[in-house]
Length: 497
Image (cartoon, rainbow, N blue to C red):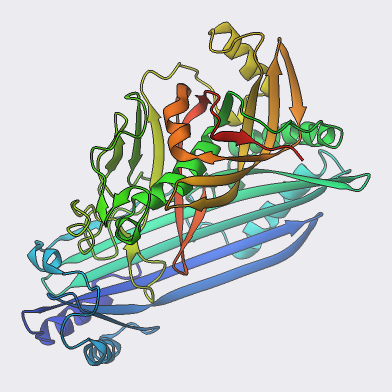
């Protein structure tokens, strides 16, 4: 590890020597993040990027709720002295307006622990030149599947290492390895342009080294190519309300944007749809007893983070348990004012950022999901429709829409209203499957949750995303059953032209 005791013990000693008054607490966040990224476009290497970020952030809290923050891009005792001195100068004298008491931080017990995720093919496995060559070869292999479309392949690998010290003696050390392979294809035809993508989430160079992974990606790209060819002539969906199915990636995006942000304790304080007068609406019924919404770290996941930015264990939280609102995603400062308990939910983009409550991996769980041992990314529209008919989950004469591929959207966290985009839509009716152009998926999250009819398949919670909040971006993930069946509801709409 880069942030080993050789570098950190002098900082721990200097932090002890700071001898802060008993009504002050300092948290020192030390980070080193190394990232390498590659982009291949149309058979050529377009760019290779290497970046190393390292430094320290020092945040001082007072029991009355005052807080100050200073950071530096150097790691060492002298740099720590300067950070502490600056933070002390910036600390407000007395409580700040609308401040939140930090009593819970002072009442916490010291924690000394570490967690490192081992990987098979880490950052040092390949030289940049070798990795570039392997990715370019794979990109050309995927490009040859169809020369009539534009193709781009990207790969990124990151090792994010943190060490968090507190004046109570806490010393928390952990790593977060991540990698992702993305392939994007675009077809322009008769004035129209459509783009589809395929991704593979990992933690190391495995996608460039393992044939099994590359073969799976190739098969998925081939399936997307066949759909892309048909999109230009596909019909539009008439605007209206339908029974719909959404895949695990769209489910993850939906619960993240339309529900998870509203459950973060700072949003509750500001007036989210899950709060009332700044208090979390614990006990509020938000859906049928068969559903739960859970957030928490999952090892080897894209959004994995085992400890908070203040050095507390990140807990797995049932935001919704059996259809009832249960617990907020809260830090040690905003938990008490919102009527909840701290769950170690605070995250920071980097050492130079102050922590705020954030999700890690948020997923929808549906009790009694219909078993299906497949990966949803390998299931075609006709196969899904036949499964629904065979299991009597769909009425032969009724029209169903299957939405796949999450492409972002907008949410009003004070009302729960959302607007999302998807990659593809399939229409199911009278035994026939029709590919349709993508359309807007809009509605209200409570209408969606109350309208859930069934989950299909095992949990799939490996969705990559970068979540933006208050100028900070952190990796997040999530999902749900392979497919979620949602009944028609007037507050859930699919748009046409």
